[in-house]
Length: 239
Ligand code: C5P
Image (cartoon, rainbow, N blue to C red; front, side, top):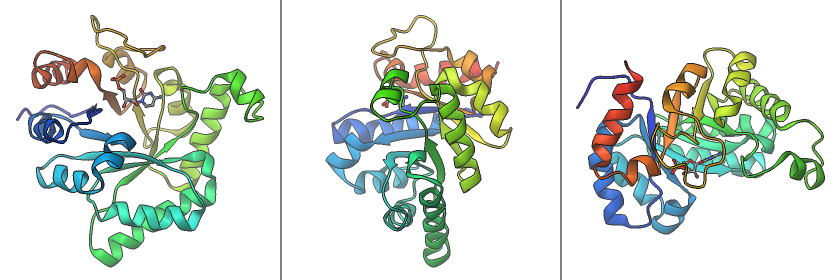
């Protein structure tokens, strides 16, 4: 295992349990975390998180919780029992819902003696255009203004940070300060295919702009040797 600062979160978008288990062992030690999203969580259930944690991997559980405060509080408390490092929730659930998530984590930490996840807010999904935000959701701010407003709300609620596209890193960092985590997907090392990502950024640029962690999936998972690719990206970031 190398001793560089770990800043890459690998998106484990796989739907094969054996493949996932191999990746926990292969990539876990060199990644800041492995991201398990709804697809895997719904297919394999909470046990997949426990298995990854038991194998020593750190997990970002990308469930994007969004419900009434009491439900999110209970869900966050239950996630805390699984041992994930990071949990995502929607900031558009509002201040009270985000505060309730924090209470849920603290409750589990107190009652079950576990270490709960850090909480990351999801602001405006990158799949939503400014036009859709205005015409379908009735939001008249620009995407950037709305993202910053929701990031500030997440900070006020006591969340640890947000997930943000490369385009928004600088304005969130400026508005929310240095001790607020920014986790950024849409990352492509030079020479990698953009796949279906529209606005991409290199790992080096995203970190220079102020991101703390990068979420990278296909450029690592589809490489001939995923572990080598992860280490190459991580080492370049540490130069
Ligand atoms: O394979 P790739 O590097 O594009 O994977 C990026 C991961 O980050 C995927 O799991 C994707 O769902 C997630 N993500 C994203 N863009 C966002 C939010 C999440 O690509 N705005």
